[in-house]
Image 1: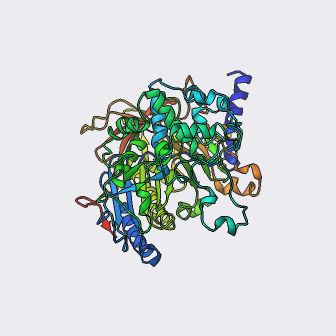
Image 2: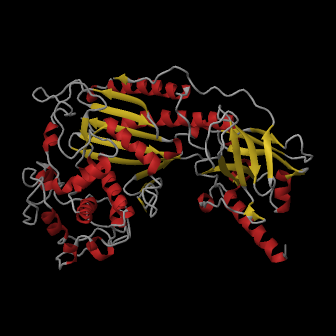
Length: 601
């Protein structure tokens, strides 16, 4: 290796270490998806805790007129459900007698997720491009207008990502329609003659496409296109019109035939379900009958929690493969908060508070985040939320009818114990499947071994590594001139597999690929950077060195036995295969013969 090459290799390694030392522990899923097929006891314990918390919440009299449906699902099956029927309902129109998984709610803005999925499917079919301007498909927007919105600069992608800059609403939300509020705020009498003549301005007659187009052509933007995010319902109404134009059918027919029917979501529709299935909140049941018209793409669907679980199972298994042009869940724009982002159209929340009290006391500088991909909705009488946590293979549906204060409490009481339990399950399963000591076969004379350990904060890491007599963990910092106490080697799954999973008695024939990467030890790196602004700056660099044309840091696990434990490790750059030295007793993480607890509160 010449001097230039040595300098480059050293620079690559030191650049990676400097970023890690600035305070970045690896923040992607550092474990494979958990297995919930045989109900882990940690999950049952969490659901018992959640049920007790829900009962405590419902003891508050202010929720006597509220109903809810809650479901938790993995990508394979529903794991837990809880339903509650309001104590007090409308006497003349009570709706569903008992709330179940088939009871229907107005899911409001959750409808936007279906609208964007429709757009993505049409992109995959080649019928549109996400980066085309919206006026390519809605040619009336190309005509002269009295407004100032630059339609030629607004793409389908920016509409779906809350980056269009166009106004939020147009046919509802005007304070002039609210009794007493204008005078209470000191507003002058309303005299505008430019208000629409539909929806809330005309006894909730459904608005038409023509009325929408006429309105937006006379509107001004909130921001210039793609400059700053701001929530817009109008954006999704326009996307619904695009779907209708490119498919040659109505928006509603397309969503029903292309999405709802294939997913067997028979309890979801734009048509009003019968009262026997309806969740009709006391004193708010009137909105059940309101037709959304051209506003259907932004909030017109009726749905049940069991149907939403089916939909979330689809999301968990397809979010990265609906179309190669975009990962559906990736952030697309920022909100005003440090921890919140917009996707297409997901509302993304990242928090380090849920797993904060699970930290290893020896590594208190490590921050562990949980990312929720959510979509909420609200209409008179209905507050709804769906949440996807791909890292833990979980989808959560919370549908409420009644008071607006109930859903935030339900969400807090469900998500925190659930994620803590899922993380505990992952720890047990990773330790069982991967941790252990691996050595060369008896026939080899090489002095080579490889030991993996798992801790809650540091994940799966290399604890010792001897390659033909060389202590690799000791040699790395000497070779690259870094402190031996600064970093450790953490393993990160790539979710790449090769070969077939045969589940033969002699092991699984598939190979599972991981990478090891330097991660900061908080004992040295964290305290030095306390208070420094740029200590929070992070980047991801997994493929950071090569040797002889191969990834230096690639590790392959092979030969998984029936208990889920891997028995072979291959280190690509070292061209060596190591075998688990002992087969320990499997960690018991299942409950045979047990069924999930389902309770109607």
